[in-house]
Amino acid sequence: MTTPLNKKFKPFLTYLPPDEYARIKKFAKKHKTTMSQVIREGIAIRMTPDSPYANGINDGIDMAVKVIKGMKASQMRFPSGASFAELVEDELFKHRYQEALNEQT
Image 1 (cartoon, rainbow, N blue to C red):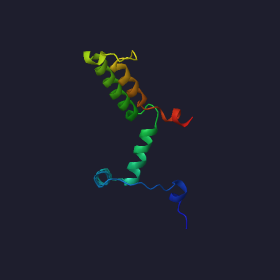
Image 2: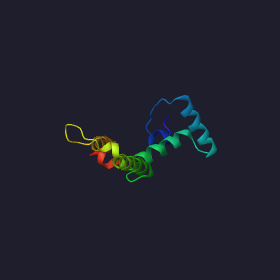
Image 3: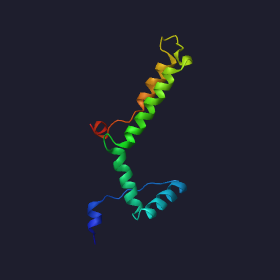
Image 4: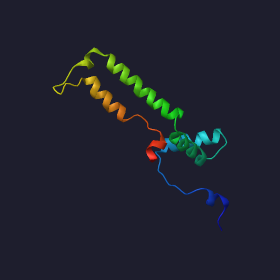
């Protein structure tokens, strides 16, 4: 017999390290919810455009770029003409979190 829950949700299996499993279990118990709900909320936050998650990642990357650009040693130039700071900045910006909507198109 199919329950309404089975019609509403699709099953998904993942593996967690024991310490993460324990943390989620403890968090869910403390907040009187299920582990599945905690995981669904985490996924929703991660995939929501302009979320605190995405903003936090991007703010951290922006701060790292600012620090690197401000270091005198990072202004050293390679034969290509690019500075160390420019090369690192390019790599860091590749890791900026893109909004989920941009990723789906």
